[in-house]
Image (cartoon, rainbow, N blue to C red):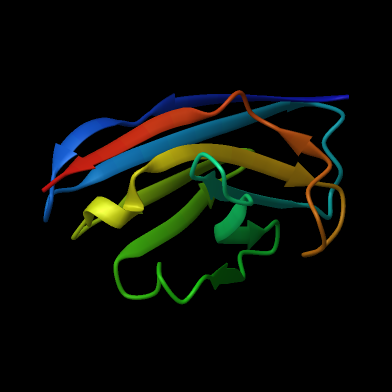
Length: 116
């Protein structure tokens, strides 16, 4: 079992910045992927950014150039800049015991609201 604890999120005006943090604990494998997904009510959960344990990163097209994902050990941080109202969603931390692939564990979710 892997537990993910998220922090951050909240309300920000368009053009502002927010930072999300997620710490993983439990049975952490040497090769793993941690990331952030987001979900708007009525829509599918979508990838925002992810980082593997060796440090390589991947971003969605909407996140490139505005968001930065980083990790230190089993903690990942998503720095979100130049936020837009369409970034409003519940953001979920994710984990899986492989490089890339689909998540097998999820955090509880944290709300990000960007006002126009």
